[in-house]
Image (cartoon, rainbow, N blue to C red; front, top):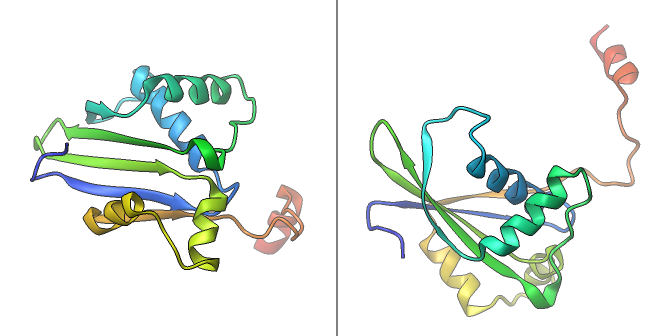
Length: 146
């Protein structure tokens, strides 16, 4: 359980927007001190076996598998700021993007997900532009600067 002085942040988003990839990359950085930072992982609440699995795929430049609807995971990382001693909890209800979409189309969410939302101090919603629009190339991007 998080401490009372801790802020809780939640990461949510639409299907195929990189939520699980972000979690995989973050877990890799937690395990390896290649990037200096002032935050330290104080505690993990969740399945590190799952985190290791998705982090390994991410590290090998393989597509990180999308979260299946029937095996959604919840992971919380409790971070501590080395300077101030303050803690922040980043909670990933690693829902499938499909489950996230269903809350809008069916207007229903699970009780546990509702609890996450009610206790969160803030959040981040992951999204990407429509995949049907043409991708911008560097050459095309440079033409906009002229």
